[in-house]
Image 1 (tube, rainbow, N blue to C red):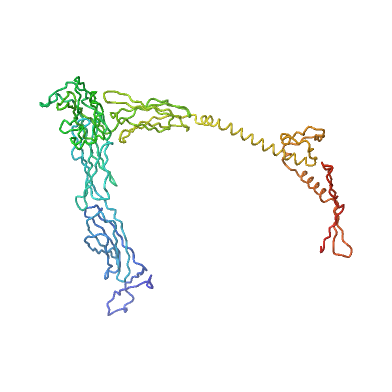
Image 2 (cartoon, rainbow, N blue to C red):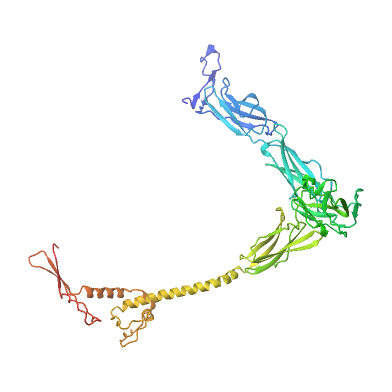
Length: 609
C-alpha cells in the first residue's frame, strides 16, 4: 500500500547511445500513476443462455487484472459442466479473464459460486441465484367425448407433460360435482406427467357447450376443450322375453327413464296388478345386460350392488318400488323387474327403467319476498326443491334464524317429489342490502342453494321500539332510588340542624313517617319560627365562607371560651386559665341524680416553655 499513487517517469533518448546526452536534451518521456487496492475486486457473473430444465445453458464469470504474466485463477461451483478460459485485452495494461461453463440444467440447480484467487494470495467470490424455468407442454384431451347420451357417464382424460416436480399442476374442469381422479407419474429423470380422469355426465342442456380442462402451473396455464354433443335417451322398441318363462303378466307401471342424483339415492316407482289368489313369493330386479341387482338371497346379487338395494313396497299389494342407495355414475341400467310364485316366473311388459344420472342437484326455488322490508318485521318465505329419493328427502338450512319451520312433501309425478320448507323470521337490524339464502342438503351431503336480496330499512325506529319496554322500568327504578337517597340526605341534614331541640317526650314515640318526613309531631310544643327567606337549593347543599366562619366561631365559643395566659412570678412557668360554661338541660327523669357541676375555672400549668 506504500506504493499507492506513486508516479513513474519512463523516458527514451532519441540519440544513439554513443551520443547519449551529448547533443542536447532530446528525449521522449511519459508519466504514470500507480493505484494500489487493499482488497481484491469481486468477479462479475452473468447467464448467457436462459436456464431451462432439461436444456443446455451457459454461465460466465470474469474479472479484470493488470498482471498478464501471472493472471488470476477463476473457479465455478454449484453446477457440473465443462469450462472454457478466455483472456482478452480491454485497454493498455488492463486484461480480462473469463471462465465460461456449459451445463445441462436440472431442477436442483439453484445457485452458482465464482471464486477468484490472485498470485499474491488475495481472493474474492460472488454468488448468483439461478431461477431455472420449468417448461411444460400443452395439455391434451386424450380422447374427445364425441356423441353422448344424456345421463350416461363417460371417462374423459386430459394429460399434460412438464419438467419440474415442484411445478406439478392442478387440473380443473369447467363442470363441477363430477368425480375427478388425478394421477401423477414420472417418466424420466426430469419429465413428469399429470392426468385427470373426469367421469362426465351430460344433460340435454349441455348440448353444444364446451368441455374444458385447464392445467394451472406456478407460472402460467394451458387448456384444451371439446364441444359436447348430447342426445336424448330413447325408449327401446320391443322387449325380448325368455322362452322358458311360464307366465307373462301384461301390465306393469315402471317409467322407462328416471333421473337420479349421483352419490344420493333413488326410489324407482314400480307397480303391477295381479288378480290371482296366489301371492307373489319373491320380487327380483336385474340388470338387462346381465346380473341381479336385487334378490332376497344376498349371495345372488352382484357385488357392485350388494347392500345398496332393497324393495320399498309390499309385493302382495302390487308395489315393487326399488331403492338404490349411494348411486354410482355408471348405474344407468336398464334395470328390469320380474317376480316368482313358487317355481313359476312372471315377467312384465314395460318393467325396465333407464337411470338418467345427474351430477348436480336441482336448484331450489324460493317464493317471492318484498324487495324492501322493515327491521323488526316478520317475513314468511318458502323454498322448494324436487328430488327422486323419497326414502331420504333433502333437508334445508337458512342463512337467518327463524321462528318456525314447516316441511311439506308433494308428489309431482310418478316417483318425483317436491319438498318445501316454509319459515317465518324477524328481519334483523342494519339498513342496507341483505342476502337471504336457502340451501338444500341432499342425501349424502350434496348441496345446492338459492339467494335473494332484501333491502332493510328503519333500523333506528326498530331499536327504539324494542328498547322502550326496558327503558321505562329502568327509568322508574332510577327515580325511586334518587328519591330515597335525597330523602335520607334531607332527613340527616335536618336532624343535624335541629340538634339543639330537646328530645321528644319518652311517653310518646314518633312514628316512622314522622321520623323520615320534615313534619313536626302534633303536640303542645311550639314550632320554630319560619325563616324570613327560604334559602336556595344550591345554598342548602353548599357551604359558603360565611357558614364556615360562623361554625368555627360557635365552636370556639362553646369549647374555648374565656381563655387567658399569664406568667407566674419568679418562675419559668406559664399559667393558662380557661373559663367555660356548659348549658344544662333538665333531665326527663326528675328523680335522677344530677352530676357534679363543672369547676368554674380550670388552671393548666406548662413547664419549660
